Image (cartoon, rainbow over all chains, first blue to last red; front, side):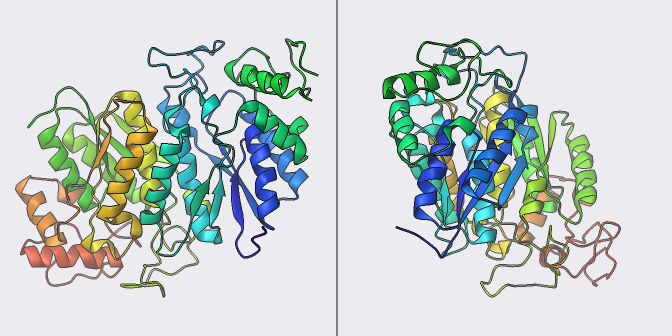
Length: 232
Length: 232
């Protein structure tokens, strides 16, 4: 079903999930706008390169790159605070990984909603995944439902803006399969939380990605420093 | 009732409402943290000066100034887009003033919630006023109620973070009176949307402020370029 009247915004981090989400959005909308947030994460430059490559692949010229360095200034995450180590499948006492940036999705979605109001977009896609999100509170369906209710009350009457989470209940293997079916450019994506040259293969994010490809029975097209048997 | 266990965050723009809100928060909490957002508004430098003066008055040393220039880049408001004129009591066809920055409060509150998670704050004060907000959608009680529900789902379990809006149902005259009772430093505040040297006296924000002082029967301690009979 194409929606030619309103552009749709896709949050594109440069990772696999957002790339597959963009492919889903491209099926439903003739006009896409890509939003990327830099928030002082370790692999910021590499993710931005992936973002631009994915935008080019989809022919998207309406892009917005938002510096959100205050999320790094606020700290509290191993993604942005380089004194906190990123370890494999690293968990805090709360069961939430140290890579959790507090309330990150709420911050990025707020920017997306502001942009949507100005460009007349009604749909905002985010590639959040509940199962693989390791307990990040702002990756759960209850959060997105509450977010949508808040957007309805906080935007101009009739704005009709809603967040869509097409991957929310998928496993990483299902995402790999869906992305492959849709010819999403997975080779252009970047998932590693630690390195920028070759993916480390051992951080939380690499581990989840590799397991997804393994279970899908599809080789991962990117290169790893530590190359598990099921990668390319 | 003092709450010594957790610091409270106050969103301090530098205007009168946030100054009175800070005075309300200072009564309830022994430790305050002040958050200020620069979002490319015309009077950014003047507001920041007011912010620091108010922080000094309250003895608050834990301050965070957040550059949110992306809100200006996104545009859509006369506050940040200098090609859109600010006119007295200026309204769009929708009844929403051109000074409306789409979803501004949601953006700033998201930063505040991230910071609250990191510093262990449970209360975030914002000086939003429903009556005088000229129809900004993100100044209504329904918005803050929905925002709090979203925060509960999107933060660590037990974070207990909630937004407080002590001025929400007050008139500007009531705010002037309350601020005066609490000895809030209103002379240090800045409300004008247009000028940075002397308040213009004619923009939406000046007009609301001056009417508030007039109705409260209290002289406004700041100076105006166009000096109505009820100002200082």
